[in-house]
Image (cartoon, rainbow, N blue to C red; front, side):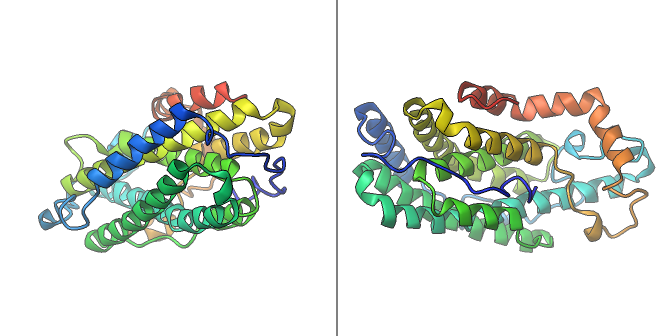
Length: 306
């Protein structure tokens, strides 16, 4: 995934107000998000039933959402090993959220300082609310990993390199990139966890997180749509190509969990033959569409060809 952003993100020089900032309907929509955010805030202590403890005899996600499911390897694993893989993939997914969400406040604060004069008061305030919520999410995710006895994955170099480039871009560009990473991750986690067989703490935590993320996604889509609508298509060719590469890289990523298993996996997750086997199954394509179909349809309206 690190090669996706190898070239500099280019964006046209800022002209006038930030996209959407001079639109009354947009600002009214964002004001509603602010009101909802301040009224319905996640509580670190009570939004998740921590007192239940994580039940690791139950899966942390649906079996059919595990990367190895429906491959020749899956049937070679014991039921307990299959459950362990769900927890290791959960750790990977939660680590991905932490990696990104700890960078968003840095990115948005830079935009507030450098581009605040271009923003409407509503956009300015919601970006502060957004950043505050991300910090609480990180605290919650770290608490979950500790309670579940899971290892947080090392920082994702792709996210750090991406944000370093986005720091000097227009805010609208940074918003659309972070929107899509969060949206893809959210789609995957919600489809994977909201089933009765899943550990109740995992299910409740991802649901509590989702309530606030829905508002973040609404904000991101609102700004992105306004920016793409006003920016000439020829000025967004490279950005659209980079978005395409990033989306496909995230969607088809192989989970880096092999080093964390308590047993030797009977395969190499990076084996090209195994990757081809997994991706060639109808089940794989059905899962990708079920997870990300809404995202794919939306980015196509922006001219991102998948």
